[in-house]
Amino acid sequence: MRLSIYFESLFRHLNPMTNQSFTAPFQQRSPGKGSVAISRKQSHVPRQGLLRLISFVSFLLLLLSFFSGLQAQTVELLTSGTKTSLRGLSVVNDQVIWVSGSAGTVGRSIDGGKTWEWHTVPGFEKREFRDIEAFDARRALIIAIAEPAYILETMDGGKNWKPVFTDSTKGMFLDAIDFLNAKEGIVVGDPIGDSVFLATTKNGGKTWQRQPGPVLNKGEAFFAASGSNIQLGKKGLYTAVTGGLSSRLLLNGQALPVPMAQGKESTGANSFDVSSKGRMIIVGGDFSDEKDTVANCIYTDDPERRTWLQPTVPPAGYRSCVQFLDAKKVIACGLTGVDISPDGGSFWQLISTEGFHVCRKAKTGKAVFLAGGNGRVARLKLSPAEAAKEENKEYGWPK
Image: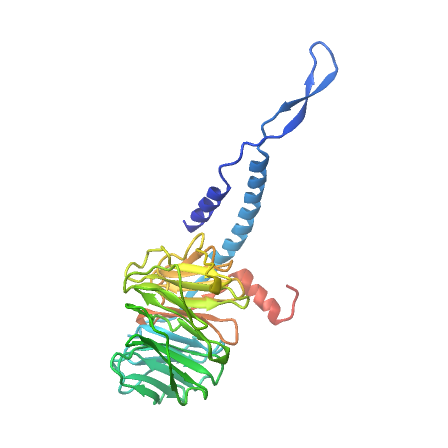
C-alpha cells in the first residue's frame, strides 16, 4: 500500500510528458523499382518524455532495491506485560539497556534484551519517570515528572536510588535529560512563568545548577514523550524543540519557527535528531489525531536559514521519537507504528503497526531498541542482507 504512494508521487513529478519531437530518417521503397529512397519525416517521438521515462525506470529500480530491504526489516518484541508505560530508554551498548516509565518503574537488561530486571522505586510508585540516562550496567539517572521534580541516581543497577536534585517550585514538570559525555549534562522542563526551566551538570549528574531559559509563547511548552526533544552541544550550547500552540526550534540562543503542526495543546514537535553530516529531522504531529500525517515531519541541512523540507512520503501518523541510524538511514516511532527512511527523511516506509513511544540506537554498538505501553520493549531486526553485511564486517570479509 505504501509503495503505491511512492510511485504515484513519482508519476506526478514525471508527467505530463512534453510534446517536443525529433526528426528520424526512415526507408521507403519506390513504386515499381527495387531502389530504396531515404526520406525524412516527423516520427513524433517525445525526446524529453523518453528521457524522463528512462530516468523514472532507473529510479524505480533503485527505489525497489531500497524498499525490498526495508520490507525485510521487522520489529522483534522482547518483553511485554509489565504494568507500565515506558517513555525513557537508554541503550549503553548492544547488551546493556535501561528503560523507565509510569508507576515508578525502571527496567534493565544486561544480555541484549533476553532477560529483564524490573524495579519499583520506593516512594515513587505513583510517579512517572519520563526519561533515563544510563552510563553503564550499574549507574543511571532518572527524572520524575510533576512537582516536586526529582532527578534520582542509582549506583547498583537500579536496586537503590537517591535524589541528586529536587525542586518543589509550583508548576515544575521535567521533560527530558541529555548528556554530551560522561560529565556534562542538561535537563529541561516546562516554563516556570514564561521562561523554560533549565539545569546543567558538569560532574555526571552529582550536582545540578539552574540556568536562565528562554521565554516561550503562551501555550508553548515541551512534550515529555520520549526524552528526545533536547540535545546538549559543546560549550554549553543546546538545541531543543517545542510544541503546543506554537512549535519552534531553540538553536544557539534563537527561537526559530518551524513548519510543524501547531495551534493546539496536542500539536507540535516532539523529537529531533541530527546526523553525522549535519542533517536535522524533526517529528511530531497531533497526538490527539494519531493517524494524521499533516506536518508531522520536516528536515533540513541548514536549520538557521530555515530551509525546511517536507517528506515526499511522510511517516504514517503522529511520531514521538526519531533517530538517525547512520548518515542517511532514520527510524521514527509513535502510537501507530514504526517507520524507516533510507534517504535522510524524504521517503518513509511503515515497517510495523505496533505502537512505541521511544526508539534508541546503542551509544556504542549497532543495536536499536524501542519501548512503549504495557511494558513493551522491542528490537529492530536487520534484514538478512544487512545482517550478512554486518557479519562480514565483524570477520573482516570483503563488503
